[in-house]
Image 1 (cartoon, helix red, strand yellow):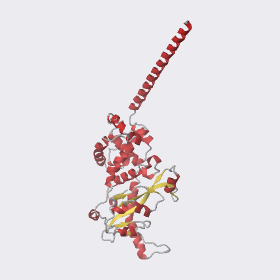
Image 2 (tube, rainbow, N blue to C red; image 1 turned 135 degrees about the vertical axis):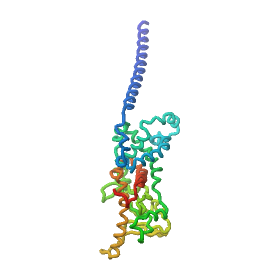
Image 3 (cartoon, rainbow, N blue to C red; image 1 turned 60 degrees about the horizontal axis):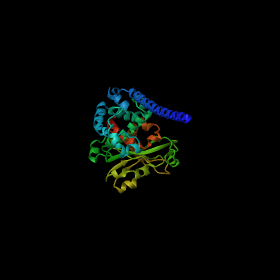
Image 4 (cartoon, rainbow, N blue to C red; image 1 turned 180 degrees about the horizontal axis):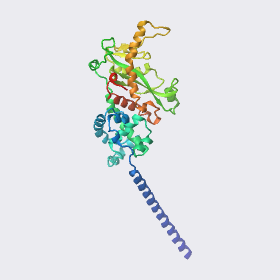
Length: 361
């Protein structure tokens, strides 16, 4: 009987000790979490936003925005819109209505001010920096830097991207450069070309095949860009696989929908879209050239020069877009889903610049 009582007491003590261990373990975990939070709260940005605001030159270098006043005005326009938007944290977390109530209690607790988030997104576009680099510069986690960019780029696409628009014929005629006036190209409203953006090799073999280009030895996304004669970008398409031809992209984007009767389109030889334009009573100007003909006539040579001298503006416009290094180098797979928004945003920013014929890159 005595032995049984002793065993019962021992069992009770063991049970109590186990409960104490669990309680102490919870306290340890709680203090660990508090310590990590305190460390994160003490992390400070190593980037001074005042550097951007020093001068127009610095502002353009760091963000691509041409002037400090434009930077401030643009931020003031977007501030209220973004203040009401949650940071993107993936479709399961951001789009779950069951978590909205929890979020509304803490939606104002941002680790960075909105102006810093604005600058971070622009610097990502301008330099193509890795999120880990941006996280170190701004004193936040890599995941948070990615969430900030994803949130802002969607806002940029719908607001700054709206600067890519098709002006009226009268507006185009009013701002027509001297090289178009008094020539047969006076009615040109669109100068078009395609450009490619390097992509990280996709894991899906079918997608990899659709984006692979032999002559560049790389996977690419291809975009159609249109400008008017003064250099304003008036249309950018969604992205297509790099293997798509210029004609295919033109026909399968909505470019032909913005063409009006009696518009003139200037393009390179690869855009064999004369019949498609004729259906909407528009005209195509491309350099002359026929298969099997080894030498062009004097008139054809002159026509080729005339078109080339005027098409140079579309090359300058695309070069201006590639000033944003995120388009100049390989885009990682994690950003491919946002590439259309990125491309449209950069086109909108480029429309803040002076007209191309007067602009020195």
